[in-house]
Length: 265
Image 1 (cartoon, rainbow, N blue to C red):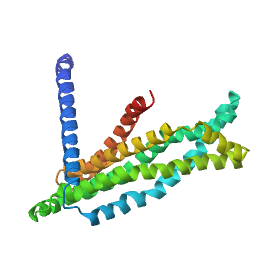
Image 2: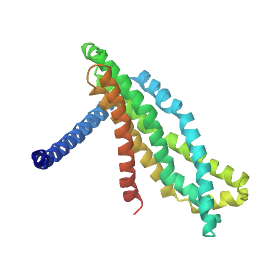
Image 3: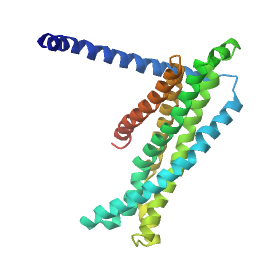
Image 4: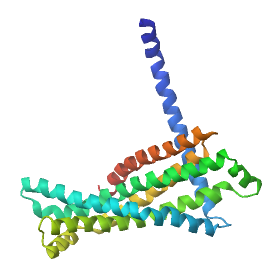
């Protein structure tokens, strides 16, 4: 027993160092993958049909999920802020906190997480299946760059679509808070709107768009990277799908902190 414990203590720094090394190498590989895909996106030929297809799949088809999530979150946020505000005699702060909270944090983060669950998994599963069935190899045989044809459109479309989805989600979320506040909590509609507008700044809006674009790039990059790196077989497809969602979600939350630190000093 003591020998096992001593061996574990001796091997622990090695295991930690090995995992750190794998993490650093993975970051480098993902960054190189992203830069190469962006480079391929700006040189001809341009696969317009593929871009149009991804706009529908990634953007339009994600709208119902984003809208429902934003609406119910906005309503719940208004109820929670009102409940907490009554303890501090600050019920009048509900409109401004709902608006600022959604624009700065809840809108881009919730939209990013919902789209990550839907889009990153779909991209990873599709590309991993194509790799397992050797369709990606077939594209190379036909003198078609798989990165340019499969990856670049998804990254560009997701990066552009997520700020649009986030803007719509922000509007719907704030409207959800407005509806609950007016109909359920008895707020004056005109005063609620005035209070919301008074405290919202331009920086709140553009910070939301910057965060959304960053999250969109993370989501598509993770989905494409793990899809392309999937191992053979059905197990590889499942692992690629899971890894894409997990890493997308973690990176969204991590980058949310760093962007907040950068944008709201």
